[in-house]
Image (cartoon, rainbow, N blue to C red; front, side):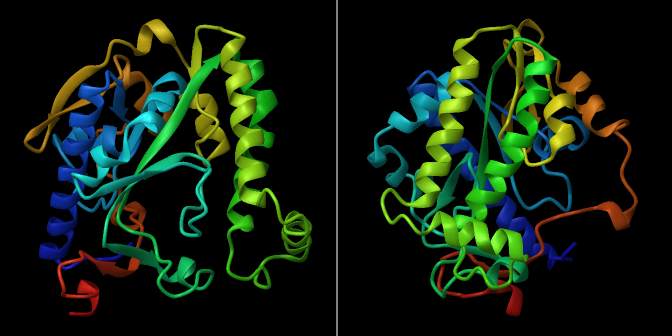
Length: 288
């Protein structure tokens, strides 16, 4: 965990909170339901705001609302200094199958990721938007977990600057993926993955989970009946009312156990950025 200078972490959290408020305004305008999840939901319940060391925000949307988000005019995001990217995008810093909202003219990059991306392709400050969909039963989720995990790893590898730091099997996969120039490999991987979750959603079912979550175990632990998830509730989050799932306490307890208890310092995790530029002319504020 990076020990941010307190004023820097506070500045980052102020920016992230304003991004949430802007997303909320867009979602209200276009009748889109979203909610705070994972660490953001813990922060809402335990701290009425950010977890003190946290440096990101996690949001969830149902597949139908993800479709609405994709149709929001670019000018709506641009007016707020934001932009919205899905797995269809070509930007190399977007290495996940789920969507993200980014803050224009900023940078937030880790030492680990810096190795893999060319200069000027560092990730802007972001908010994660995970996609949730319907399943018939737990078995259907289990049957798709390995597929989801493979897809996420392949997608990440398809956008690398260089494959040579990968293991040999993944390096071979990277080369194979890039043999066919059109459509690009990241687009093929995303479309295949998206079509899979869309088909699952069409099959119906009252169980809701997400195949866009990176940890396999979490896909099962966040599975809930739809009637237990909605309508969302609102809880205090800094000076904002954050929407959370109706059964937020149950989901968080399934994921994290006694989430109301503060973890020991050695388990307090953040993204450990090496570059953090707020786009205000100061450059990397972590070097100051």
